[in-house]
Length: 65
Image 1 (cartoon, rainbow, N blue to C red):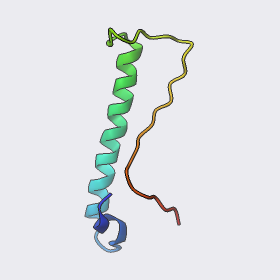
Image 2 (cartoon, one colour; image 1 turned 90 degrees about the horizontal axis):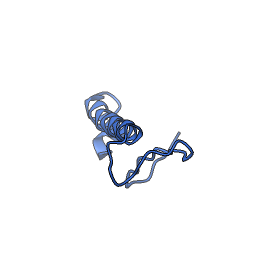
Image 3 (tube, rainbow, N blue to C red; image 1 turned 90 degrees about the vertical axis):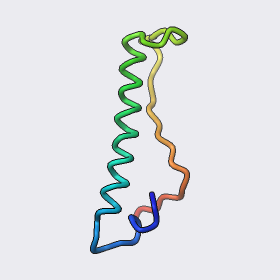
């Protein structure tokens, strides 16, 4: 997330833009899971017994206030 999105209190445009990017990443992860479940990956056959744990990594420190 860029710096203005973290500190700006009055203008939320930067924050909304960054959240839309994050939402796009989340959507991409779930589309990939659906493709895997529908055997779209020849190298990785779907196995119901294996649990799927979606993970999105951001390369910065997060602080919750």
